[in-house]
Length: 232
Image (tube, rainbow, N blue to C red; front, top):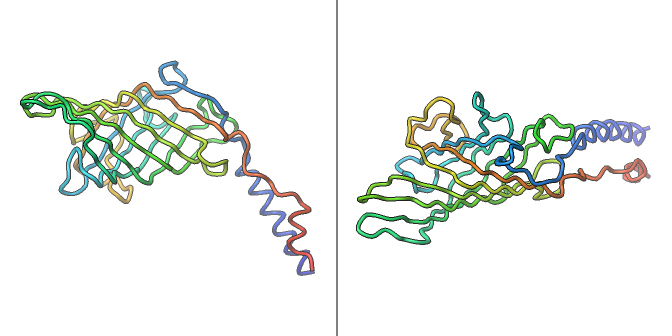
């Protein structure tokens, strides 16, 4: 009787899990905001206490923007800057540019289920595996006057095969420092709460999203393999 009860419980969990995890993994493909596949976006990056535009400890928050609302197509939330390395110094006499590699750790991505990758689930959420930004900062007379960035993101969507999202973001453009105007994501602290007060904001454009390997969900166990776990 005990084995029968255990098997019944596992069967219920298996059915519920299959309905949740395997409802409809995102469709494989390469999608571009420049082709109108999904919306481009906006971002706000907080600065760590005592830090600045190029300090570690900052937290990035980016979301799609449809002209009226944020986050309908995609979100990148809470990756934190862990390394900032100068890779080229092209400033002479206070004029020119400096190029930095900025590495992030942690955070998550979310894709809206109504996007062109949609396949049955209301949304798709995954952890960020890798996140690197190449930021070129422009100076005139020793003062920062502009900044552009290229971002590269790898993520693993929950419930599907590993590293099935690769995201390339071109033309991230710095617009200014806090306070962040309405219509931009909130500045987040290291605990992912909207309490940060210092940081910068900008637009992110020309996005390319590649989804591969998600079309097959987590493998469902057979009834026979479940029963074998509880045989005397």
